[in-house]
Amino acid sequence: MRMILVGPPGAGKGTQAARLITLLDIPHISTGDMLRAAVKEGTELGKQADAFMKRGDLVPDDVVIGMVIERISMEDCGSGMMLDGFPRTRPQAEALGVALEQAGLALDSVVLIEVPDGSIVSRIVGRRSDPKTGRIYHLEFDPPAEDVVDRLVQRKDDTREACVARLRKYHSETAPIIPFYDALGILRRVDGVGSPDEVTERVRAALKV
Image (cartoon, rainbow, N blue to C red):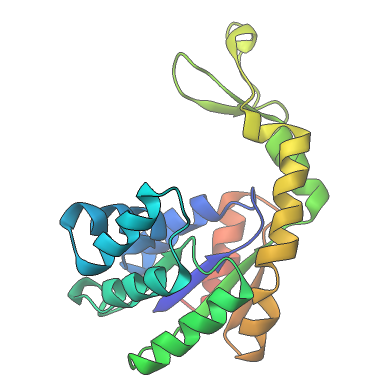
């Protein structure tokens, strides 16, 4: 199964992605990891990407898409893959669709994990990390023991202001890919409110796996 997992920040995509790649036995393709690997290996597309990054520029969509096609054409993706971190905008989704078609490939499913903005803010703002152990707690859903509370810190990305800014960017830039994939008939909507196990079962039901 060739698929993409999308949803707002804090929707639990990371947790569900880890479970799905194990369940489906498919590679998890992060565009960030893919870019770094291509640069390290010195591939033609990697050299192009490296030149842009050294100048402090964003890697153009056509270079990233070329890498995606190159990567998912490899043998280990023969039975499918999960693409992570791309596409982030509708133009990227449209360009990826054209490139897949030209390569004789197609996406099977785009899973959208839906969580209301209010719940997202509660999830993110309540997170705290322990600099000593690296463990992540949540003040409401996974509270820490009293003897570690005083040393916990809140990451800059987890403040209410940062969370609201990330949600605003998601709705303006990434959410427009949802109607695009819906029109193609491959969008699978999943309620992301509940325990990770409950959400996993909903994803499995949506994908019929």
